[in-house]
Structures are given as structure tokens and as C-alpha cells.
Image (tube, rainbow, N blue to C red; front, side, top):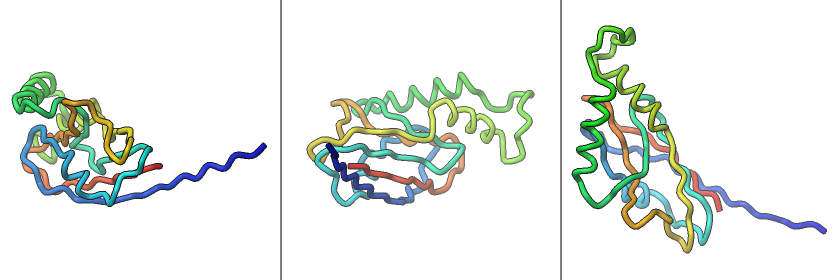
Length: 143
């Protein structure tokens, strides 16, 4: 007995505008960049940078975004004497460490043509540089 499974893959490359340092909900930027989500599948979002990250968290209360920034800055401070990678500024090495802790991608299930995020979930751009530029994302939808 043979079964045939057809997989469809759509891929989008988008450039986010430059965001200030901090945590920013970018769910709408991502959804506005894809044609149409399938009935079921998975959306994979990957950021092509080493000093910014992606994560999923609270999308309703903006103080969560501020608290994330505060905690990350306390956990991984700038201007400490043991950093060696400082040629690009005092925020660069801490940005790499923070980005590694959170990661460069997120996966979200898709059902009935919609992202299956929880009621209070949104996709965050975690911008760790003081003067970052535009950020590039690769969005892959598998159905």
C-alpha cells in the first residue's frame, strides 16, 4: 500500500523597518507579508542576524516588553571588562549573548488559515543593539 503526501512550501523574505532597542511585537508585520495561510501547517520565522532574536510571549500588556528589556540588561550588562569583542561598541557582545539565549527562530502551528498562537501571545523582535538597522526575516510556510 502506498500513500502519497503532498507538501507545499512557500517562502517569503521580508525586511523589517529599523526598530529601537528593546522588545517589539511584530506579528502583524509577519502576517501582512504572507499571501494566505493554509488550512493546516507550520510557519517558521528565522532572523538573519546575530545581535537580534525572535521569541513568543505576552502581546496584551506593553509593560511586559519593558520588563524584558530591564531584566536582560541586568542579566547581561554592557561595559564589563571581560568582553573581548568590543570593536563594534559596548552593546555588541551583550547583543550576541542575548540573541543566543533567545534564539534566531520560532515555529507556529497553522490551523484553519490562522496562526495558532495563544490568546495572549505575539511574536517579538528582540532588538539588542542601540543603533540597529533594518532586520531581515525568512518566513517559511509548510503545509
